[in-house]
Image 1: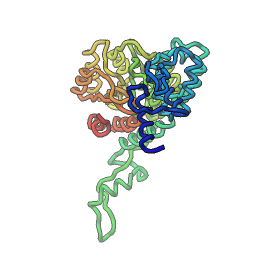
Image 2: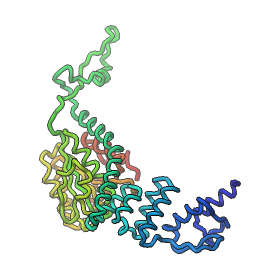
Image 3: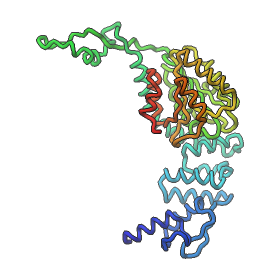
Length: 388
């Protein structure tokens, strides 16, 4: 095939056929099957190419037909594209009811968005589909833990070690010789080939008790589905660290404390109920009550800030926490979904009191936790690490 023909073939795949596409290019074999799989979701009532076949978008309400389509897209497209097409099919063609069938759950490509959809259907899911749904959710959670857990533990442990540094180490074994030498290079005596350490840098004795309290307060309204999934995984990882006391609460108009389920993030996820209203003030009040050592606490509110409760009271509670020494962070989203929709007025009010509100990707969250534990300037951290 010439370069010109290949170019036309690609344009034909993009434009979807019909007399208006202007390519004059027909498809056959694998290309035709790929085109049909795309058309099922994206070609709503369009015409076919020169062969005159009419192509109607949609998969109908037939589980076997959807299952065949899922098999086709997994054959012809990489998994990242499959995940996007599944998400679009669920939204555009209203296939959520079909996801309640076990054979469908076994055919789909697991991803965060699909987990969010299943959690929204949790209360209406029949028993025969529940185990398949749990298996799919567990697979996604296990993959996220493999990708994120080690990085999170390393970042948090390093931050705790750095925050425990002292200039008065009690034992020789507690001296950080590398940092001590570098800090005293100005005291180098060439004739004696030695450094006189006028200032020691070392570590305080490692504490076996809890060093920081972390409260994750998660909005479980429908738009926050991906954030709920990632937050549950991070909550479980943080809860596994003995130096942290981690609490996790989810909220809509009510507040549910899921801390006792943090040993299993799948249980946490099935304890959520996506959708409904939002009472941030009530959730902040509950989370505030979990804090016993404000100066050593990190409170992370994950919400789009659309408040259905008492706005001024919510702002007063956040201000009171910051004045007491709590490191308060507001994440508008914890996901890879790009710029979120959020209440700009509430975000601006929080920023005015020194509490920045921004979206954070899962890959950046471990470093954010490290910055919070070290009590660095979070607004400055966000400026350096978060793409507007």
